[in-house]
Length: 158
Image (cartoon, rainbow, N blue to C red; front, side):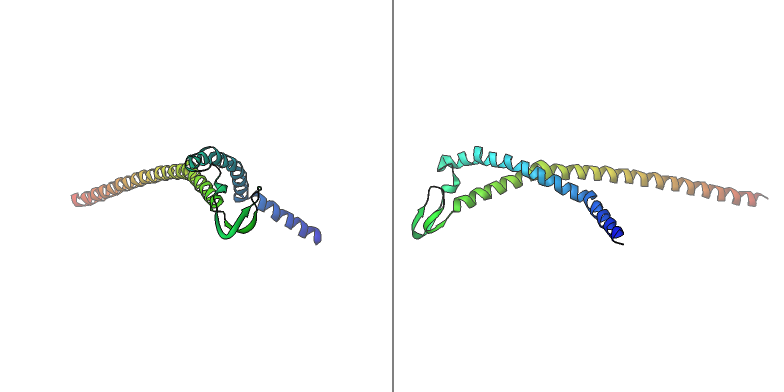
């Protein structure tokens, strides 16, 4: 009995792994991890210099002191006071917005347009099939009516 149960557990695990959505999720995680490097490079190479034109290139240096005296060590840890590090929040928000924009404009939007075209082609094909079926039905009805008319005319002639 235990061998049978082990086999069923193994079969269930195998079926779980072979599901399409598990594989899709694994691919998404790998692509997402690789994509993070691109987004971080865009933020460090483009966004931070643009912000640096106004102030500093490192958004992490933007902070406000909530309770004096505020002292921050060289490694960025707060030694005294209460510091709100709003620059790092701004940097993370910009990274998120850039990531979302790239994913939407380069992946979601083109895929949605492609699927809409495929659906439109499928509907057009179905519509053409319905027209063909309707015209065939009309022709068959006309043939039936003609045969009925011929039979009725043949009976009247006798």
